[in-house]
Length: 516
Image (cartoon, rainbow, N blue to C red; front, side):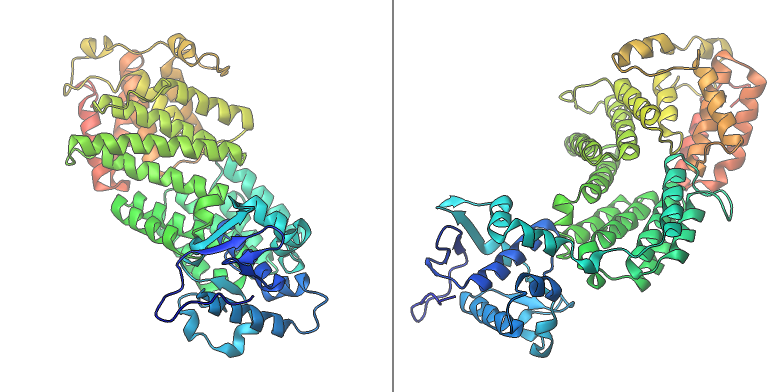
C-alpha cells in the first residue's frame, strides 16, 4: 500500500477513502491487494458483529502464500501509514500501540473503536455497502471466513436430543418440573453432555432464561455467574452473541427487581461494548430481546406518576415503537413464542396508556386485537409460556372493574363487561378458536390448569390468576368460590414484592364487602 504523502505539520485526514473499482485505491493511491483484503475483511467483521478476523481465516484466504507472517507485517505497516489503529489478540481493552508484537501473528485481528467508521468505501465514486464489499472480497472466501472448520460442532445426538426436548418444554411452558423433566432439567442434561465450552455455554444461557421466565431472578443471576466463569467471547468470537444475550438476561433480572434504571444502564453498557455493537444492530434474536426489554423499561417510565406528563407520553410512544420493532424481528426470525409475547404486551401496554390518559392516538389497532393476535400466534404455532395474555384479556374485558372500595354486591354485578361475542367481533378477521362461553369459565379453566400443573406460572402470575377468578366469581358466579380465591390470594401476598402486595391489597378492597 503506497503511503500518501502528508506535508509536515499536517495530520492524517480522519476519513480514509477506499475505491473498490479497478484498480482499487486508498486515499487516491494504489494499494496492495492483500493489505486491502485484510482491511475490508476487518471492516466487514465490524459491521456484521463478528468483530474479529482470525489467523486461520487469513491462512485459508492466502493458502498459496509461503510466508503469511510477511503478509501480516506488510499489512500492519500499511495500516500504520494510514493512521489506522488495528489491534490483535483477545484483549480489546488495550490500545493497539501497547500490544506485544510477539503475539501479532497468532491473531485474532480487530479494528479499534471508531476506526471502522473512518473508512469511506465507494465503487466508481458511488457509496458502497456491505454487499459490494462482500462481492469484492469474493463470495467463496467470505463464506469460508464466516464458518470455518473450527466452528463445526462435535456434539453427540444425545446432546441435541436433550437440547431440542428442553426447547419444546420451554415453548409449552413446562419450565421446572422435577429432576428429569421440564426445560431446566433438559438444559442441565445438555450441559453435562457438551463436548466443548461453546455448547456448554449455550446450555447455561438457556438455563438462565428458564429461571428468568419462571420469575426467579436470583437463580438466573447464579447461572449467569457460572456462565461468566466458564465462557468468554474471546474463546470463539463468532459466538459472541452468547455474551450479548447474557447481558440482556442480566438486565431482565434488574427489571424484575423493579429497578428499570439499573436495567437501562446494563443495556447501555452492553450496546456500547465493542464485542457486541454489531450484534445489537444485526442479530435478530439479540435485537428482538433488546427491543422487548427497552419497551418494558419505557413502559415503566410512562406509568410512573411522579414523572412529568410530557415525558410520560414520550416514554409511552417509545415503548410502543420498541414493541412494534420486537414483533417484526420475532416474526422475521420465526421466533413465534417471542412474537406472541410481544403482541400481548403491545396490546396490554396500549390499554394501560389509554386508561392513564396518555396520548398514543397515533397507534392503530385496538388493544384487544393485539391480545387476539397473541392468542392466535400461540394457538397456531403451538407455543405456551404462561397465562399473561389470558390475564390481560380478562382484565381488559372488565375495564379494570369499579374503583369504589367494597361495593355492594348488586352494584358490583351491574358493572358492564364486554361480552365474549363482542371480543370476537373486535378481533376479526383473526380466526381464533374460542372454547369458552363466558369470562368466568375462562378464568376458572386457567386456575384449574395452574393448580393441576398443566401450566407453570411464577408467583406474580399466580396472584393475578386468583384475582381474576375472585372478580368473575363475584360478578356472575359463586360468592363462596370468590371468597376462597380471595383468601388464597391473601396467603400468597408474602411471595410478592412490596409494590405488588400494595396493588393486590387495593384490588381485593374493590371486591364486594362480603368477599374482599
